[in-house]
Image 1 (tube, rainbow over the protein chains, first blue to last red):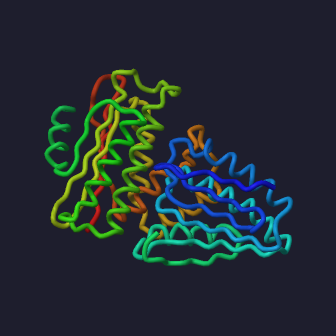
Image 2: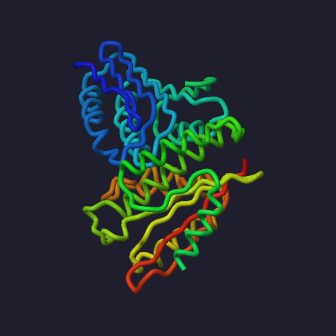
Length: 127
Length: 181
């Protein structure tokens, strides 16, 4: 599979999905008016990945903000990745949040409660 | 009545105020100005409050955009596709003001929805948010039905809102959110 690289903008996150390394990174802000339009190609790539995943998959989420439309799309991505976990390959979600950002910490905990994937919550001083 | 509402909001929005036509580019300009404003050192706002103000403003403005302004929806005639946005700072609180015209037939359902969400304790709001996220489906606007739950949850207290009469078909929906610093 090819890498998926999408540059970040003031409203959409940087996406870097490295198939060879099994590393999927979301970084920046996700506040588009049409979240479905932005996330559809990302979901399509993930659907391809889950058919041939690496033995270890690492998802890194380093989002400064995301709007509620994006939150549903992010959930859809994590739900797709659940199937890798169910099939026995190793997968972990690394959820980053800035210190004192209880909203982003809580968002990670919400996903942790909903999806059946191992989560690591990582507090950093600043993105 | 609407002019009076506008005057009050403008007086209270001592940091930032806009009242006029709305579009994606105007929304982006408002958010850019908002971010510069809250980052002013003299305001001494904590990082978490700055982020929360920004996040709530994004949700409010996108809500206005999706529900009142999207041309495909044709909910409002062209001359009523305007909004207001304001930011006010007092010693103990930061307040966000936002509003738009709505068809009168939407008043009852919106009022009931906001009153219901305002009545919930924080733990119940968190539970509702999680359940809606996990089980909800996309609305036609892709908004997932989470917007007001998220806004009230992050505000951590009931939000104030009013419906100001305009004419027999439309009213003006005006909201104020206050955050403790």
